Image (tube, rainbow, N blue to C red):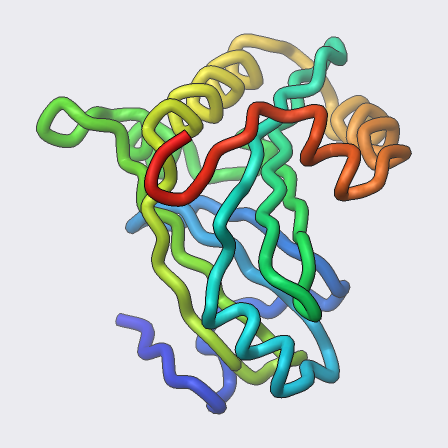
Length: 177
């Protein structure tokens, strides 16, 4: 069992690139935010959390899931994408199963400054947003595509700024739409 402690090394694989990386672990959905050189104000903005977020499924032949979480400044908005094809199929099946008739809407954020864990935040996403996300996962599973196609369409989505991606997606507020 992994132990997560603030200001200690992160106990799992650490993204080498700056940005937000969404993953599905055995126990649920996580987002790793890698921000080298974090300021105290950026950490405080992370701890304060976000009031709004959006979910976008691209209209490309390979459906791409894009989340944008609007943290307060100076942290600012972060976007992350998700490719279910690179996730353990058992984790996907477990995530898609209803739990007592409800979707699994928990998302855990880990804020990293290189190897060091600087913050942890658990949020409950709007079930409507999670339903949209799960539909994209199902579409990805039903679509045959090589990783190179996913990468190409993802690059096309990132021609847009994070703010533009946010506006293009269905927007949600914490605590309801």
